[in-house]
Image (spheres, rainbow, N blue to C red):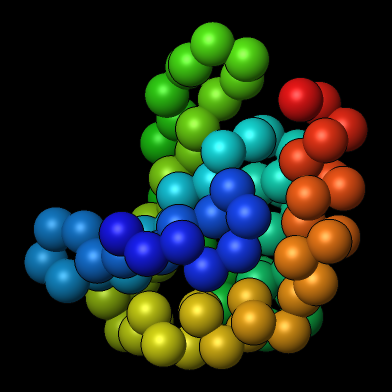
Length: 90
C-alpha cells in the first residue's frame, strides 16, 4: 500500500485489483462520489473494518480499472481539503 493523500492508501489486492483504503466513512463517501461522478471510476464493492475512533473502508475497483488512473484522479484533490473532511468526524 502507498499513501497518496492524508488518510488514503492505494494498492493492489487479490488478482491485481486496485484497492483504496480510506480511514473515515465521511471521507470515503466524498471520494466514492468524486471518483464515480467526476472521474467515471466507480468502485465495484467495498468492505469496512471497525477501529477505535471510526471505520476503515476498502474500495475494490473492477479489474479493468488501473491503479494509475485512480491515483491520477486523486492527485487533483487538495490534501488540505482531505484533512478538513477527515477532521469532521475525527
